[in-house]
Length: 279
Image (cartoon, rainbow, N blue to C red; front, side, top):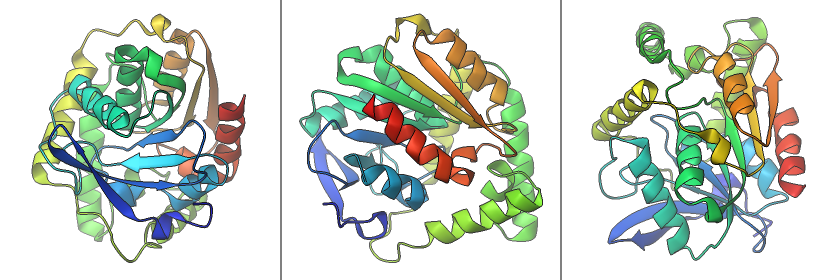
């Protein structure tokens, strides 16, 4: 599958407990796969092709829509614990005994929960733009998101312009490049996120933010934590906090970037992930 790129990777379907889950796979046919877990309100086509293709040049990559997201069936659950249970069921339905996880934002919360619920399934973890459960600041996240959506409506633009990238010349350039890359796939695109999915995901994030913190010391796997240095959605300090609480973590904070720092700095992030997963 090495000649397959994200823009033309076929969309496949697998039944998981009677529910169809859609996914795309690329990269080598063997080795421990890297399972991508996407962000709030995202579907398959919201993954940055440079990140997917870059990692798939060396590693087997599988990105999927969890229950109720995009073209997958069912309804999105309203807790991160249930999202993780669905992700575990999907991974096991594909027949994998061990995987690496790459979770971005909400997906990073799901990745942590997978590691807590099924530790034997997880070899290594990449957590990008995410923090720990009970980390605080949840009301601030909601306020920032509302403001970004209002700005987006007024400027007829995508709210991620304001949520993922700083409003600096470099940040604006990075945002423009990112959205151009998202349009590279023109055929067989995913279904947009539903209203039910949006509401359930927001509820899950709020519930997690107000919950008691997890004991992350039980996650023994190596973890690579990455973020931008000015993340408006998940404060960069929360990434540092989660790295401190994980017993085997490394932390990278990318300069002059925000929530989408790993996309803005994909030229540094991709080789760092490949090196980390190859250790």
